[in-house]
Length: 333
Image (cartoon, one colour):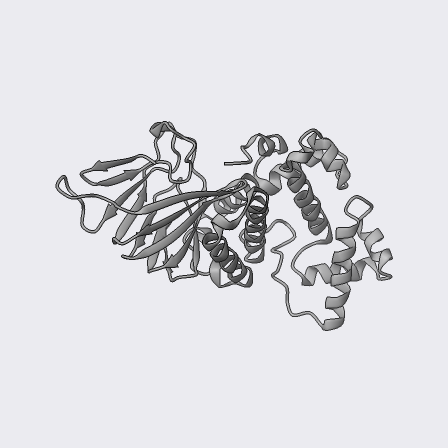
């Protein structure tokens, strides 16, 4: 990937967007300062950068022995940069954005965006792994960031939540074993990362809709928890059928009022959960190459969303882009 040594540091072009040959078109250009400000008589930035991909996710391993400070320098001609997920494999680091600072220890991640100024510091002998997000997940993150820009980027609490700990473990294994995945397994691993991140945002309330954040449940008595588990399994098994509150309650011999109370304790409404599960299945089908011959409205109808205009509207609300735009994005890097 192209590098340009300047008096104020080294410009690194296309460490994620490796398909872009034109420097002006690289959305992920950054300015790296190693040690003291380099000046014309210094050697500049040196590191091993190994790009990789997991379906719609682009990644890069960055290994270096210098203290570095990284700042975004995207060209005005480049597409608007999106959100990034950084993960520290070894060394120490910190990221500052939107007036917030997240100190990174090995095994921790941080969310940030190249669309606004940030400052990433990595100590000597570091290994850092960075991922750009798939379109659907990027839409969710962008919507959450737009509503609360100081609550998402450089947030040190995200890795400490239950879903955040799971995400950390998955990214760590993904980074270490990236070369061991074939195209299909890599694509599926990328899907898993996006799904866990979306769950994390809902769990923490960053991407909560009118029904509230999923996972923000109070402790539930064992009997109620078992009932809710059966209901959730029923919903997943009947996404193409009638899942109105009345139908779901009748299938489990409980009142509609009791059904709503169970989901309220779980931090979401029945309707929001059903809609979200259907949209997740549709999103998965939209990026499946074997289903590319089917129109989006047909895929939506398979999962219980037969009104094409309503489907398009709720899909955009959930993922931040239209079904057509999702399909138009490159699937393989």
